[in-house]
Length: 271
Ligand SMILES: NC(=O)c1ccc[n+]([C@@H]2O[C@H](COP(=O)([O-])OP(=O)(O)OC[C@H]3O[C@@H](n4cnc5c(N)ncnc54)[C@H](O)[C@@H]3O)[C@@H](O)[C@H]2O)c1
Ligand SMILES: Nc1ncnc2c1ncn2[C@@H]1O[C@H](COP(=O)(O)OP(=O)(O)OP(=O)(O)O)[C@@H](O)[C@H]1O
Image (cartoon, rainbow, N blue to C red):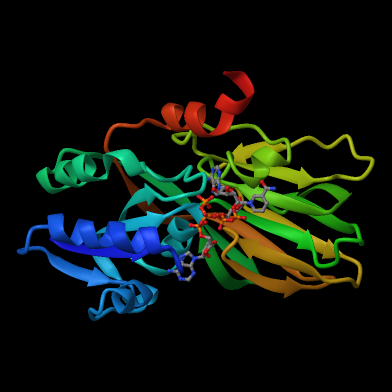
C-alpha cells in the first residue's frame, strides 16, 4: 500500500498531526510526503505533481484538497484542520480512530466527477468543484453569452458565471443562489454572480452537456478552476466545459454528504 501525506502550507498543527499519522502507519506501507511537509519533518519529499499513491491523506482544508485533486493522484482522505473543511471526512477529535479504520480497510469510497475546461479548444485544466469566469476588474460588469450543446441560450451581464459540479454546488454556486445538487446526480449547474437586471436563474443541465461561455466586449475576465488555477480571458475567447471521463475518489469513514451538509452548511442557519 502506497500512502501519500500532504499538509496545508504554513500550518504547524497540520505538521504535528502528520507526524502522528506517520507513527500510526504500518512500516510495511510505502510513504510519500509532499515537499514542504517533508522539509518540516526532515524527511525526503516530492512535488505535488509527483504524488501518485493508493491513498492520499490531506491535512488542512478544502483548498488543500482541491490543490491535491488538481496536481496529485490517489484516493483522498481529508482531515480538517481549522477552516470549514466541507470536503474533509475527519475532524480533529477522531484522527487516531479514523487512521486505525483506514489501516483496517474499514471505509467506503465515493467518486466525484471532474470538469474539463477548454479555452479556445485548448485544454486549460480540470476541476472537481467549479469553473468561474469572473470580471477581471471588480468595478466593471461583464457580458457573457451562454450556450448549451452549441445552442445559444442567453446573453447576460454579471460579475461572473459559475459552472459547478454536484460536489461544488455547495460552494461558490451556493453562495450565488444556486441549488444544492446531491453528489450522485449526473448534472452540472450554471449560476450567475450578481446578474444585472436579469431574470436568469441558475440552470441545471445533464452531465453530457457541453457548456460554452463566450466573453463579449474587449475587457478582460478571469477563468478560475476550483479557486486553484486561473488565466486571463478576453473578448471573443471561448470557454468550453464538459464532464471528464476521469473521476476522483474520496474515502468515506462514517459521515455522509447529509451529515456534512447539516453540520457545515446549514446548521448556523437552521439549528
Ligand atoms: N463567495 C463564495 O462562496 C466563494 C468565493 C470564491 C471561491 N469560492 C469557492 O472556494 C473554492 C476554493 O476553495 P478554497 O478553500 O481554495 O478557497 P477559499 O479559501 O476562498 O475558500 C472558500 C470557502 O469555500 C469552502 N469550500 C470549498 N469547496 C467547497 C465545497 N465543495 N462545498 C462547500 N464549501 C466549499 C472552503 O472551505 C472555504 O470556506 C472554489 O472552488 C469556490 O467554489 C467561494
Ligand atoms: N501544501 C501547499 N502548498 C501550496 N499551497 C497550499 C498548500 N496547502 C494549501 N495551499 C493553498 O492554501 C489555500 C488555503 O488552504 P485551505 O483551503 O486548505 O485552508 P482553509 O481555507 O483554512 O480551509 P477551508 O478551505 O476548509 O476553509 C488553498 O486554496 C491552497 O491553494
